[in-house]
Image (cartoon, rainbow, N blue to C red; front, top):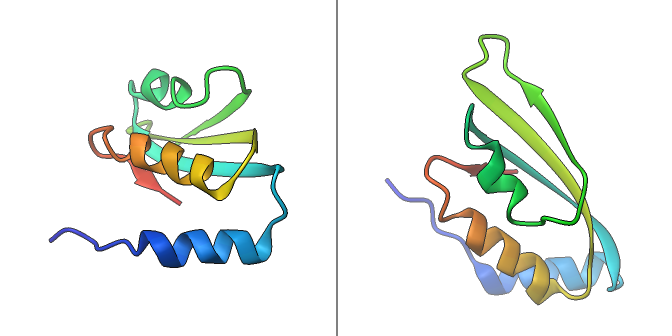
Length: 88
């Protein structure tokens, strides 16, 4: 079952809660070994990694200066193309 995502509602919520440009924190969970795919989403930003207790998954946190809600949405849309990614 695929989750539905209301892009317009998320965009409106971002714009209501943030004043762009703004520092935005992205969090993703991926299978171990796919960290480089996540890092490629925002290549010029520091990424903090934390492995799961069994080492099967990795949580990645990236803080990046984003110019608009559209830029944030673009990162999430590109992240969705990574197999098995969970965006938080």
